[in-house]
Length: 112
Image 1 (tube, one colour):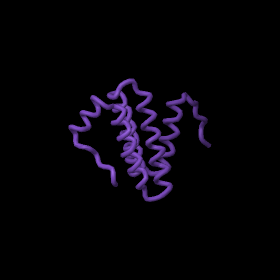
Image 2 (cartoon, helix red, strand yellow):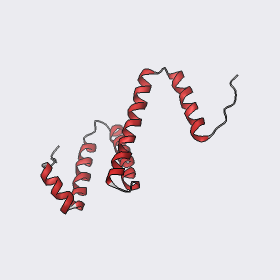
Image 3 (cartoon, rainbow, N blue to C red):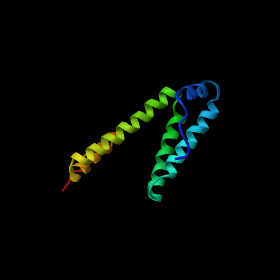
Image 4 (cartoon, helix red, strand yellow):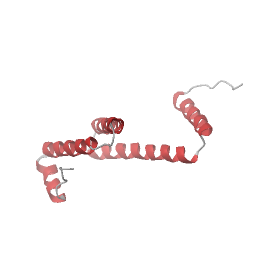
């Protein structure tokens, strides 16, 4: 990757004195990483993930709130990965149905 992250002191100075430049640098470095994806499918997934991260940043009121929202996204993703590795598929399906019912107040019909 040709783009390098500047020294911490430079980033601090940019944050204080050139926030637009810092944002342009962030976008440039992010796009450089995404462009190195091993396949088109991986690149599209990374672009989708970056879209979601950018959306959370815009929705948050402060940089700290954005950090918390993105951290929560990462924790949920890690928990889903963990569950998929330790829980059998049929049990995962039941858990997903339960969560859907709980989150959307769906009344389940009895199984036959």
